[in-house]
Length: 567
Image (cartoon, rainbow, N blue to C red; front, side, top):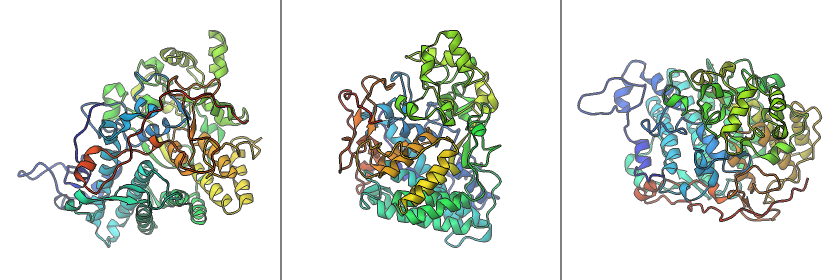
């Protein structure tokens, strides 16, 4: 990994040009200030649009490198999720998310991957701050919705940063440090002495932003799910109160967020043409991003620098795609798969490991139950080190069922918030106040996925510390299955203070990285893996004297002995 040299917060707050917002600049400078741009016709809306227009499909970190993980917000889903146990990879030599899966010094402050969240998130935050500067402290009617969007998005971005960088979740330690706060009122001169905000300060700021967003978006009607509205604000509040373990408010806002939405049906969830690739035709997606056919990450590098290249395997005929053709598909953890009952339709999003014991003809026949291009799944498997189909994910489908043209197949949307998440937050929050009520809500939800669901199977899934109750373990399992690949794995492990288990009989994790981490069945202590506490890029701490850092993670030196499951 190359080392990086960039003062991150200064770049985030400083006067940089805004792609797609302004085309003319004053001749005496090579940048446009917010004040200058504010005078341009339609400028305010352009700045509002700029908040989300780099969330997917653009090379934000380094356009010239065309990095296969430099494609926006959903790339962070995979960075976080491969740190745990629920997603497995096979080839550390060609897998682009190896650094996060192997969890060693490459995640430290002197290496390039440390710069990714800093560049992306503080860039997005700067876009929010620009809008809020233009709107002023008392936005006009014309500017209220734009200010509301900016407040909502800034809250969401800081929620991500807080969860990625804090060594302890809010409920464990309100004084644990997160990241430096950079607001529209922050002066450039303050950045050199800008300390990491504590959990208490950070989450207070997040809630303050969401309160303002709730006010300014109260009467706003959006045209699509790619812009936040009041329901998304409620959803973000539900997430925030969940982290803070303010169960009453988490339940309240999760329930409010669900109004007007319905959970994905079995046919929608497992659709071969529209499964997890579009908000059209369902009433579940609350907020999303999309990859468009004119995005640089689609047009350049054969479309391989995109979410679709990493997560869509049904395009083997195209010859492109890291997941489909280059040997690096993401798979579900073997044990998690085995815990999903056959009566749960979500199991059909992952290829049965038993198919690997069949001959070729029978395998193609069996795979036709999963895909309209079953032979292609064998092609995908053959390119991988194991050459197996077991565990291949088919949750994220190619756009419109396109199997030959990756440029069309990869132009998908990806959900950032679904009503199912809100249902699970409501159930958990209610259950932490009245377990009987929580069990009822959780059971009602689970039966929409598995009519034969019976509560109680996963109450003993401790995976480490004792912070989570047996009821929360049941919720956690539902979240792991329902939200697989959607970026929540690390967040949940940290807030529940779980460990991970990669070493067990028949594991499909790679030798050398089969770690059981966290002191299982212990009764106290901080057990989540320390590599899930992101390091701050070294140049920030070099130039910001008040900014501390998290320790560089140290990779375990050997595989763990095989864990024996309780059930």
